[in-house]
View 1 (cartoon, rainbow, N blue to C red):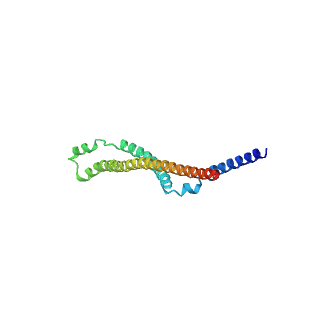
View 2: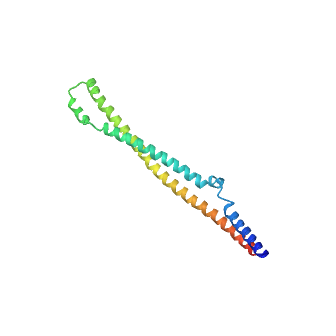
View 3: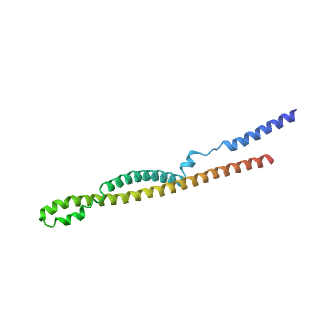
Length: 159
């Protein structure tokens, strides 16, 4: 009876050591935020989401403006006003030139925000890849450390 009691206590102690080895040292928060790759991945994710959002909003805004200020055909009509004097020509052309300037400005801004949109997508993709790869690396490293600790405990119990 005494040997059974001793064996039972020994088994409980070994089980407690194994549980301690497995659950004593979980992945610490410091290990997560001290990983430069993970931090840079999260920053790329956030910046990518922000750029993508701004790009979508502003691109749709300037596309609507381009549609509204599309060429009206007035550029060709001003040639019919050859009989007008210089001042009247300026008045007629002012509206045409203002519309053309709005159109060209909106087109340039649309191109810029399209680049922002594509850059946001690229940053989001890079951030997702970096974050996932780093998380996998951190989890694998933590698992390998726990396996090594269990092997050391098994060697100590056998010795």
